[in-house]
Image 1 (cartoon, rainbow, N blue to C red):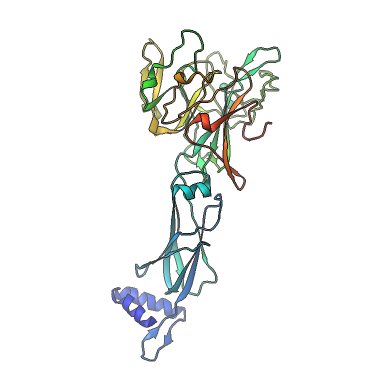
Image 2 (image 1 turned 90 degrees about the horizontal axis):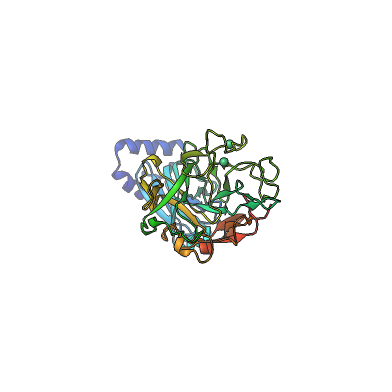
Length: 417
Ligand SMILES: [Ca+2]
Ligand SMILES: [Ca+2]
């Protein structure tokens, strides 16, 4: 019967391929004489063990589709992996194969495995696997795959601090960006910007931004960018980067505030606004973000009443539209279309400030607020679940639900320093 299978499969092949296969079988010493004079060839049991990415909650890729394709015969067999992620091909002819696996996760299964409710397709490929002797064990296939845009704003310390004598100090503000995905994400080129508009009824004449009605875009004042050529600044799953306004130990630096809650001397980046008067401090130990557009203060200052922030990507940030804010004579903003936004965060002055929202609801349906200004409070994204040691942060595109206000910031961590 086996020889029949061989003959049938060879019939359609060219004489050259047939010669190659027979040569391979001879070399492997696999030919044996048959009673009718035809040759019978040995076949192998081939097992493929499919596993999920290392950062997932389980290892076995149950239900993965495994495709074994003969490169000589251009024939594909498909087997669905069992509950242990094992796919067994019972009769494999000697030859060269492509082994490919795929697994489509629906939102519920993705949630259980990754902590995020979003459909996901995983893949693995072994493009050239020679099988000329009986395998001694299963061939391993490790699936990989990730959604795009899995960087999230993890923490925003905007309220700033009081000095021991009761003065105000805001150079210790920072933003932390976290890789909420299951694969490494590169920060290269990531853009960060602050939404234009007041955070609430700061004074009796304050009105919400007139750009609120344009819900398809975020209108931003200053834009800074993480440098890099594409793969220079990896962020591993469950890790983060800290962007300081000034990358110094604010508690001990002569320019700092002994009552500041943070040491940012080991921040990953700082915003540096080069000015003729040198008023912004350039910490030598912390690399500077690229200043794309700077409108406003002597540094990239977040409103202590509450900022709206976006992180976004654009292949050509210089080409984004700038527009004059209606009702002003010289206030310019840059329009960032919603579809470029990777994540958004909004804090407003207090619980009655909803009318002042600057971030469109499609990107962030809520807002968070501190008890006041210069309180050292920090807004941090809540933890949705923990898989292994990796925290998966809540991301429902609603800062009201996703963030909580902490009494003290927790840069690059989850415990107070
Ligand atoms: Ca700075
Ligand atoms: Ca610096």
